[in-house]
Length: 283
Image (cartoon, rainbow, N blue to C red; front, side, top):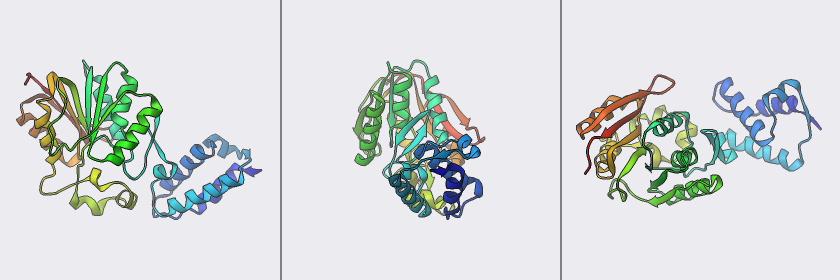
């Protein structure tokens, strides 16, 4: 038998990361709550628990991985998104809170009978829509077969009806028509921003899904918005997650592409994070 508080403090003392105390505390709490089912209340009260030897070994293995800088979500094998746990590994980006705000914008669109997510990664966007709006026809594409494998596994675990396609948006036309929404969280971190990123992200998350050339940072927005006009019905919308540096530029780009009611929406941190626009006519 072990005192949960003592076990936690020992684990915490062995985390060796160049991070703030709050960040290290958050990592340790996530591990204990998720892996050992020990809540913050349990820790404060020093609840006595029994931890099987194999779990102690697994906890040590997790600690070693965390100390290499591997994100805790990859260590656990899943990440929370919109109240659900999605499987993740280094072939997909870890879902982030700002993308939850993008999903909220999608769910508010009316009508939403059909939707396509371009560059789906873990599938967190289309699967959430399929779960929240089960009568919607949901499609998702990605260039990466490894990402699509994770996305399909997540869809199966939630019994979400999503049709996945391997597709290169930069080369291929969109293979759907008369959609209500096309949504995308494409690569938007400029190569020049690499040195500003945390090592946990830079060393472990897929660069294919993160980075875009400084020579053309709006590449994906330009291509998707142009091709989306052929795939959306009148009144259909494109919705993008964007680099906070380029909110107005993306808005101007899709406005120049004849979308109307173009909006730049700030996230909860006050950063320009979502851009959307509506098609006013059929193609």
